[in-house]
Image 1 (tube, rainbow, N blue to C red):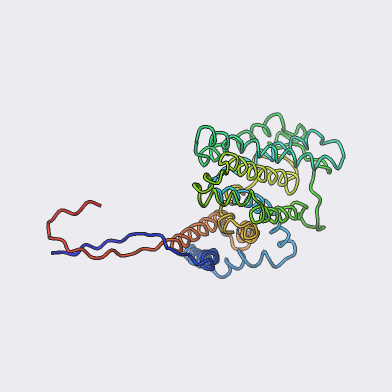
Image 2 (spheres, rainbow, N blue to C red):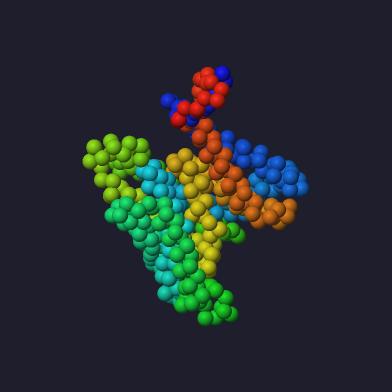
Length: 369
């Protein structure tokens, strides 16, 4: 006779809310610890590397302003994605919608590049929002009419948008006085976001990003639409019985996330960049997915997670200069953070239990599972 031992994974009946909100902090701590050993094995001083990665960028006024500049698009996109994720609408193509928003907003700026007027920047923002929404409308239509998975369509459209941008800056939108570089004209002063702090790049969009996060919190907490979105995500059957329109909510979530991503793209080209170039961001649309989950899909939590992910960008650049770390270290830290967040979430929501040992005859056929 032999004993057969097996394990099973089962969901926990109750999940303490305090534990659920503590897992992002645990993921951050584990990421730092893992980074310590990675730096050590790579032959770098781990204490010095972590210092320049996480601490020294925050010790200067300019570093803090850059933190806000990089956090603004992450917060805006993260809020839009979180609203959709709460309804189980998985928009993974925010990077493409950001790119379309940058293109449409940039086209408006270039159309009036030699003119002045306070109306140009608002018109750019409207065009950016509409561009992002139009691009998000493609997966929305395919999802609601043909039941095509929005994860695949939104993700694949990202690469179409990137190639479309490259085609424009290498072709019809190329600066005729730019010595054949793939870039557009520099935008006029009326098409640039006002700088809030002299000597920095901190622009008006950073404040608007915070206001958008607050507006997202109000929408999800105090409105009927927010209630419908939460019900659709948590109990689809209850939403159907209550008469909530699944189609309308899917469209709404994708339009909000696409519009905010498009606005973020417009803010990037009218803020830090000031023109259209082949690469608008280092991947803010994808990083915002981590931001949304690290912030627990809560708009106010996304502000904190957006600042943390912005620090990973600034810290990675700073560590390259001060310590000589490779450029890929930023992606490594972001990947580790996502891994530990998902792992800790799994252990919070599920538990592994050992099945009771079952005596079996030696040589006997194993029972089918």
